[in-house]
Image (cartoon, one colour):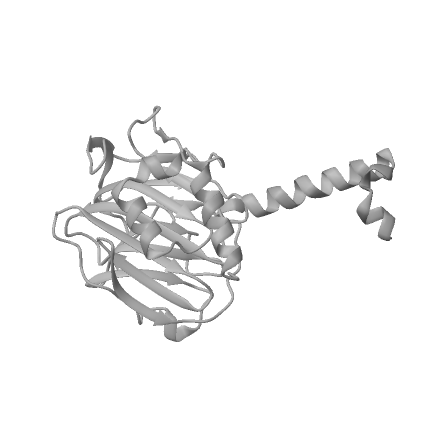
Length: 260
C-alpha cells in the first residue's frame, strides 16, 4: 500500500481508468450539487413558448391571453387573470433538499390567491408554491411540511401595481420570504419534502384556479437556498448571474466548506 500511494505510475491501465472515471464523477457531483433549474427571462416568446435558459430546458408553454410588455429587465409577460403557463414534469423540478424561487412581479387586484410558481394541480404531496398574492399578503408554501408551516408565514402585500421582487427560500429547517431584497418573514419549519410527477405551473394552480392578474419577469429557481447576498445580486442583475458558471462553482465550494 505504501508503494501504491507513493508511486501511482505502477497502476495498471484498468486501474487508471477506474481512478479517472471516479475523479470525473466526483468533480461532476461537486460542481452540480447546487444548480439553477429554471430561468424564464420572458424577453421573447416563440409562438406560445418561453424558453428556459438554464441547462435543464424547462420551457414553459402558455395558454390564454398573455403578451410581452416592458418589464423590469427587458420584456416581461403579462397575464389577464385567466391565463397560465405549464412546464412538463422534470426531475430537476423535484427539489427536496432546499429551494429558492424568485421573480419580479407587478400585480393588480384579482383572485384572493394569485400564484407565481406552483408545482402541481392540487393541494397534494410534492406541491410547492410561491404566491405573489395570498389572502392579503404573499407566501412560500409546501404541502409536505407540518401544518403549522402552511399559512403561518404570510408576508406583506405587494399588490399595488408596482414592480416588486419576491423571493422564498427553504433550507430544511427555515422558510424565509424576501420582498425587494429584504427579509420580510421567517418561520422555523423543519420537515421532509417529496417530489411529484405533476407539471410546474406559471401564473396559476393547475391551469384552472388562482390566476395571476398582472406581470411576471425573470422567474428563477434553484435547488438550494441562496444566501441574502446571492439573492440580492440575482435580483439586481438576474441575467448576468445565470451565465457565469464560476459563480455556481464558488457557491458550491462555499457550501461544502460550511458543511451545508
